[in-house]
Length: 393
Picture 1: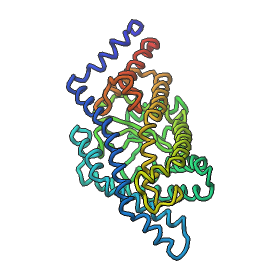
Picture 2 (picture 1 turned 135 degrees about the horizontal axis):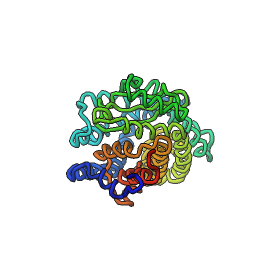
Picture 3 (picture 1 turned 90 degrees about the horizontal axis):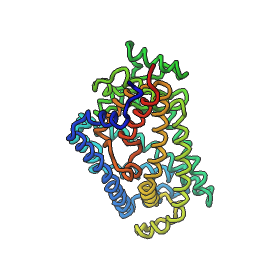
Picture 4 (picture 1 turned 120 degrees about the vertical axis):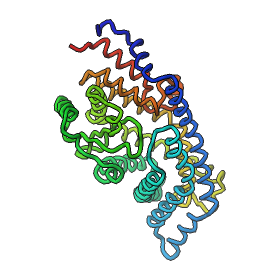
């Protein structure tokens, strides 16, 4: 029976499990999210302009160094205030884009107070790490001079790796409760899967993801000894069976086994070098365009809004590049799941449940420009192609 499977018809049957109105709602949400990228960029421009016009960063820097040159401390203070000030200015936009809109589409049940308190906590963490990163970045600009952008790629990679190491241990538990998969058929199956491919079986967790989002999801986080696979409790609230667990956890195990986090770190380090190189060349033009009075050059931390705006421009333009690279990583994780666990129907059933926040059938151009995962229709078709050519005994 499996050998006569029509992959195209099987894919269509899976997508048809959702009614047309559900697909229309998903498409509206997804395409609206594409526009958010543009409007978010506009917000970034306005925030940079407002902060520059206030002159607060220049005054802060001058105040810190009034009696003695303390460039590292000045950079640290300026960066901390910049992150906090930006958060205040962007808060109305963040409320709309990250909470109200999710609420309107039924993708979160979190009350506004809970969202705001978590957002404040995330911002406090960001102030610490972002300020330290930027202070070190400005140190590199002062010391390395013409080649600072090259060293900045290494700094970026170092911070990404450090963040991955500590996130599962110190950061993620601040927002969610993680517990080992409870005893039962799911845990038994996951342990057997981990042993089959030589992955530590004590690194499989369930967390209360429904606290923030109603999205069906799982993830892998951490690095080395801190790495773990985590399944949101939403998976089980939406009826995930053993086949789905095998398909989804197999995908996440693919990320773990193939060290995708390190590959992504290397990719982003290279992209950071390119971005910082461009920023070094165009900083003066952007500073003039923003009328950044008192900013003496790219080594001046008071020009941080200018640098941030340049990176926002490059991030918007470079989005299709990063999306394409990450799509390849996600495709590789799907292949790993199919090759090692041969659960195409489980993977397909799980993918259909993600359509509500990622429309299933975008155009090829839309997928290239905006999707950091392959389209669900593409992924389900690959699973059905696999099923047709690899029938189970």
